[in-house]
Image (cartoon, rainbow, N blue to C red; front, side, top):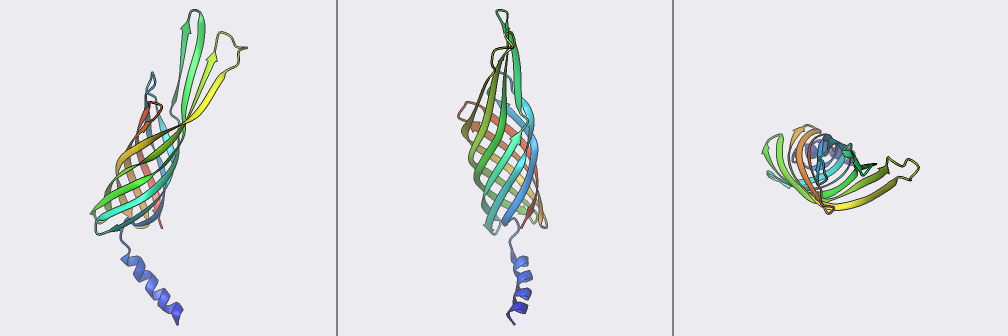
Length: 187
């Protein structure tokens, strides 16, 4: 007797759920532009996010966590007093945790802002090209910072599409601008 009541109530509860609420997973890809070095390289950012949103009426709020990688980096070769050297740096993985605050502006469209903590891995190397026998120097470290962003999310049943602009500022003096698209699934 209890099982039929649960089977009848479950679809009714699913229909009552607010759009843009609950857990979701999202695959992310887009453009990554870094500033703060002598050049400003651009690359491709890729990764994924997990989001959990709550809400009432047209207001939505939630938390998210994200892991991304990037192809962004640069190498520069220079010659000083007959000695050639190459300096390279590459931006590695980026960890992000933060919050979102959104407004449902149409039955299947939400606009939102986001803010949170970000930690990036940076790798640097130095090669003395004039003396091939000399060992290369390699350094790697993490840099903390904050991220601000704005985006819009389109609800397509259980699926979602996001577009987002994000700005990240790090304690090493650099910052990043990213434009991303996300494809996801809401549970």
